[in-house]
Length: 106
Image (cartoon, rainbow, N blue to C red):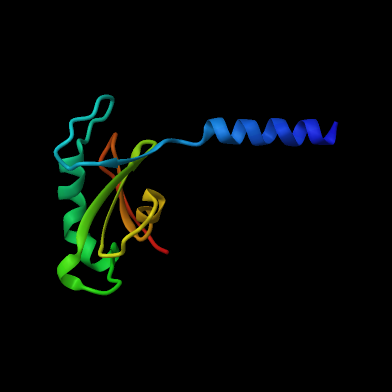
């Protein structure tokens, strides 16, 4: 019985994970009030201070927009990440429904 509940819990958590997508600022998305370019404009004044991770070369900094659930995560880094999950922190998180933002730290 214990293992059955554990397996059910694992399956539910796997299906409830929200998809994480890398977004181009010029993309147009359905079911959002704030498009990626608008989210970038909201986050832009705060990216350098709150969402920049410099690894080696400042000249190679690139801005990344990742969408997870109803949020855009916007960050800037030169790190060659192997997964998009890396770009979720540090980041400026912008709500795609109302434009509210928050700073996500490592």
